Length: 123
Image (cartoon, rainbow, N blue to C red; front, side, top):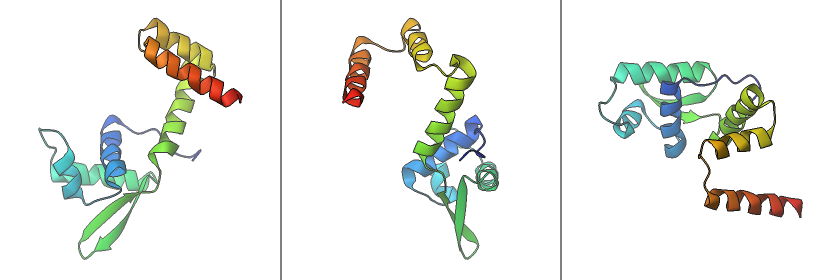
């Protein structure tokens, strides 16, 4: 996982759909994307880039290819949050939590849930 690269916005959008679907054909991915739908060739190109980056593989069915994730959403989430924590919060979860609190990105209900998680992990 250490050699994975961060996804572009377009790549991430495609991966989100493929993660949710568990895999699919280009046409199926396009059907799930919001309007205005990108061109088939655009999505196909992004998917081939994702395959080159090691995020996807495919199984051929004649001239069609069904693509499936090689990297789970959970693995990518760990990579991205690790980079966020390292690059912007000096590897400090408390700095990150403080930032979200100051920016009103966490409400009291969320904070209660975080405290419950902390208490459960202490046990």
